Length: 308
Image (cartoon, rainbow, N blue to C red; front, side, top):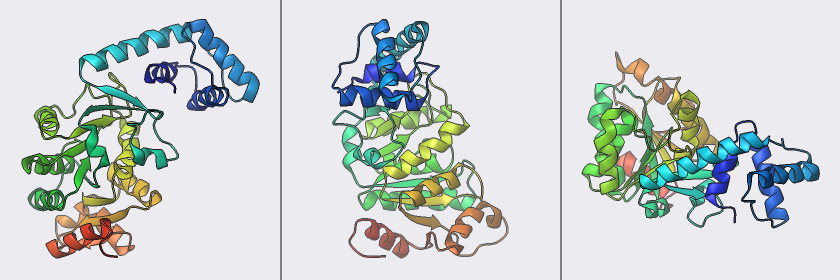
């Protein structure tokens, strides 16, 4: 087994690609080699992998020296802040991620790992929801928690916050999949909410290391982790563009059931805000969640009790 610290070292060699990392891992696995402790040994490892497969770069010694210092600092800061780093070679690595073609090499977690074994539903949506969603969204999340599902969301403003807050107020665990390192809770106003998540037996999770900042690409990429952890996905509110629709695409690829909150009478201000919801329902890609009865049936279908 390759230790997380060694994988973190590989991730921090700035001049190599993920393909090179996978080639080195393949070499170590096939030849049952131990990971070298010396920097020069790491150069030799890359050279051996290149000679065997021809599909990896060989980094210079200086790049490895820099990467080792960075990775050691990340390991120390993570430990000081109660963050555990889990590799895909560890038994505690999320089972749902093992089914992904692009599963993360490492995940960084803080909180209760046991919630990863729970049945979960992702609840997602825009950062500036309408008055309708601010009123009805908590009811949806509370019902999901009452039905025994762990809520997965992203700890962002708006729909994410609505979902996590409803869970912790119901004293239910929830999983926050974040778009940057676990050192940086964004928005800052969710600092208290992140602490409540931990207090209620929930989990903070990221594929990004301590110190790494969230950016547009990471916000999009974390959607695949949210949907992978979940048996189904509920969209509270989305327009036709933005990160929520990217998450919908991941859900479709992973063959996850999709439901959309929707006002029973749509008009005026709601037309634009719910354009994404309406598109998905018109294309028969999502169940219209317009009553508690429909919501309950949708959730039952995720538990394989009935065929929806």
